[in-house]
Length: 128
Image (tube, rainbow, N blue to C red; front, side, top):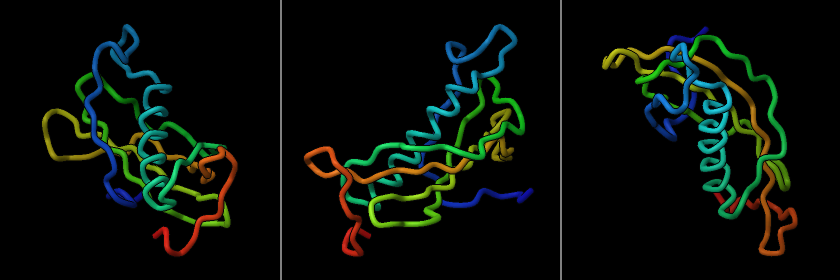
């Protein structure tokens, strides 16, 4: 496993008690939501339009996220198709108020670019 994140830092947020179970572990759905937000930012910036998540694959949790961890989400465009984008997303945490990071999960997201009519639209080279 690489010891440093792949891609660009897209979002950072702190894991709060409201996002956890009684043992202090952050819900996986909250982490997934943060990853989807970051991937959406990356996809919309590249496509220069509204994008929507259409698929997610390959997600597995490596380590738990704890209350107080700073969740750092990194994104990297893997492929740009005619109307879709594949985004690799990694979530890392900073623990114990240190700069040391630990990878907690990763996944691959697929987004589709939408036009004003809500239908898929081509992504052009001018959109980069």
